[in-house]
Amino acid sequence: MSKILVLGSCGQIGTELVLALRQKFGNENVVAADLRDEYPDILNNGAYVKLDALDRPAVRSYIIDEQIKEVYLLAALLSAKAEKNPDFAWKLNMEGLFTILDLAKEGHINKIFWPSSIAVFGPTTPADYTPQHTIMEPSTVYGISKQAGERWCEYYHNKFGVDVRSIRYPGLISYKSLPGGGTTDYAVEIFYKAKAEGKFTSFLSAGTTLPMMFMDDAIRGTLELMAAPAEKIKIRSAYNLAGCSFTPAELADEIQQYLPEFEIDYAPDFRQAIADSWPNSIDDSNAQKDWGWKAHFDTKALVKVMLDNVTA
Ligand code: NAD
Ligand code: AKB
Image (cartoon, rainbow, N blue to C red):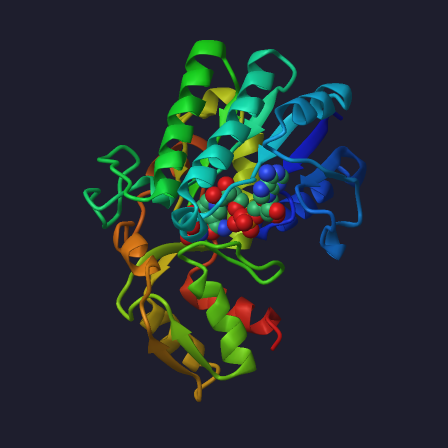
């Protein structure tokens, strides 16, 4: 079994992805890496290494010396944080990717997963049932970095045969680790506030529809994409993937089915403009056709599992 590295492993996706990869491939074969000194307790079933995705020589030596053959590169600044720090967001979101793509080009790595986002779409993109191939004029630094990343992934595949695979994740909803500074984070915070305080102030307006997905679906989709035979992966930029879509008001209604006293109000901030530039829903028929993708969690199922697991 060749070794797998998850770089950016202590965040919302990484924590659950490391656990899922260890369950599938064995604890000893999956190394969690992150910038942080401390890692979450739930990752203590396997190796952890402190590694800065921007330290190209360190990342290269680790991957070559340890004979890592598969890399999941998750280190990035998400949409809201990136708007506050555009220069650094561009640097982090692009330079780490080149380090990994180059290692694959040189033959050190066999396979890469690098996540894209619905942020690659922009205000001129058709917002409903957004197609795989469509107008893409992102208006956020995060979206621009993800779109550029997609182009580079496809380029390295076409020019150098690099086996890189990617998904345009929607907003991810989870209870094992907290989100890290995105526009869709409200849809996780709402559950904690509902349980703890019985009320929540949304930073997006009542009617803002966004594509979302429960984390179990996202992790399963990622493992399925990575396990698919290379010839089935027809898209080397990133696949559209859909879970469900809802507004803050619809999410609150669903929570009120379980917590009738729950109250929501609205105080949109700078994240509203980001959300307004993103799609309402996603057409993922290419992922369905190419490698058999199918979401399992709709809004109702997601709300139930979140309320069952989030503690005040
Ligand atoms: P997160 O912010 O929760 O986690 C990112 C992790 O990367 C953190 O643990 C952080 O410490 C680490 N990190 C930051 N800089 C680093 C560096 N220089 N070196 C090593 N580690 C570093 O993010 P996430 O939600 O887990 O997202 C992971 C990836 O998935 C990102 O590329 C993000 O753009 C993408 N994505 C996430 C979502 C979502 O809803 N969570 C949706 C679409 C795409
Ligand atoms: C964000 O809101 O920035 C992320 C994403 C959809 O990429 N959750």
